[in-house]
Image (cartoon, rainbow, N blue to C red; front, side, top):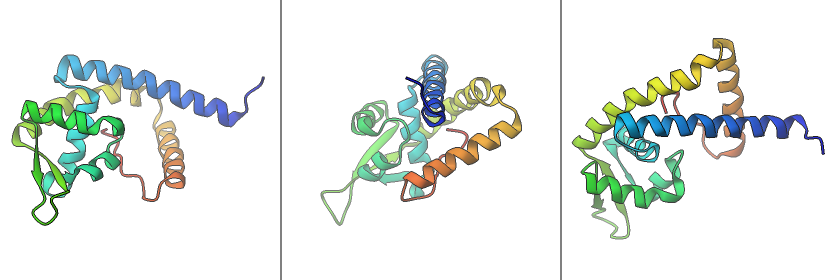
Length: 155
């Protein structure tokens, strides 16, 4: 059975994503002292207004670990990188906040992650190819989300 260009492009995207994510995760574990899932949650919290988010908003905002956010926050809390705070006006709402130690860990890991993105993704493509990929994927994201894409290249 012959696959069309859409299926072939999507398969190539998924293979490239899996290969690069594996490399980034391995490097972050070895050099940054954390998983890519931890990094994703810390980066999201670090960019949030007041460096805190409702747990549900955090689950909706992370890129890599949506189904595991609660477990990751538990792990980060044990490390002292995140704290949980109840909402004063609604006892059902819990906020996750990045701590000072979490911000330090994020800065250390960010260096590893940015270098990995450059080494395993950006350096393989020309400037024009990077711009084409960015524009195309932002269009796909916008067509499938209710909000505009917010991921930065440093993820």
